[in-house]
Image 1 (cartoon, helix red, strand yellow):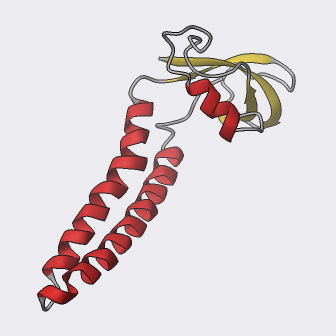
Image 2 (image 1 turned 90 degrees about the vertical axis):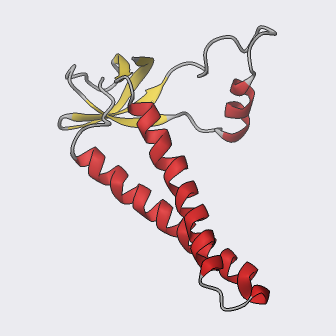
Length: 142
C-alpha cells in the first residue's frame, strides 16, 4: 500500500483537497544509491502537489492526514494511461499501413493511423479513468 502525508486544504462533503508534504520519491535522493528522480520533480513541478481524496477520516482544513492508495491501483492506472494509448498507436499504424493502396502511400497511411490510434487511446483512457473514479476503485483515502 502506498502512503504519503498531506495537509487538508479544502473539504467538499465527503471529499477533501489535500496538499502533499515532503519531497516525493523514496527518500534516497541525497545518497549516491538513489535515482535522483526528486530533481526531475523539482524541475517540472514548481507548484505543490494537490490531490482530491475520499475523506474517511472526516478531517478538517489544516489537519495532517496520511493518504493511502490501495495495492495495484498505481499499476492499473499506469497501464491505463501508458500501455493502452501505446497499443492503439501501434494498432492504428498497422491498420493504416494495411489499408494503403500502394507502397508509396503506406508510410502516410501508417502515420495517420498511428495518430488516430493515439488520439483514440488517450480518449479511451480518459473515459475509463472517469468511469473508474465514479466506481470508487481508484480513490485515495485520507
